[in-house]
Image (tube, rainbow, N blue to C red):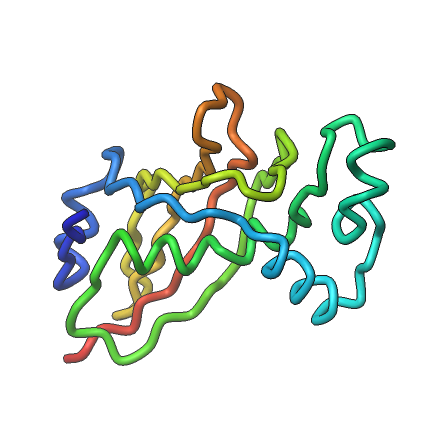
Length: 155
């Protein structure tokens, strides 16, 4: 997939209300889930015990941590968009986050991004981006939220 190129604040403003792009798919693996469990110390069986999940889980297999899927948001954003002439990008916040559906291990996911707004705050561009994580073959998304990024463009 070809990345959307954004060079400055005006480019962001021109994309307000539009779909910016859709990332490539990524397969969620058990290895990723296990490493995330280790990093966050969240070893709940629904995530890491494949045998138990096969018999006791309503999903029939292990599922990714919701926060693992959320942590992929910036990866998918940078996979979709190339913002040039930037000296610094800050993840500023999330709004209206909803985990709508579990992501079973071995599912393929991607994110669709739309630009909600782009404000010029004394030379810093504050963008609000609607992010929807889609699960291949499913109508209901894994999550949706509005992510706020602060872009400090070069002068």
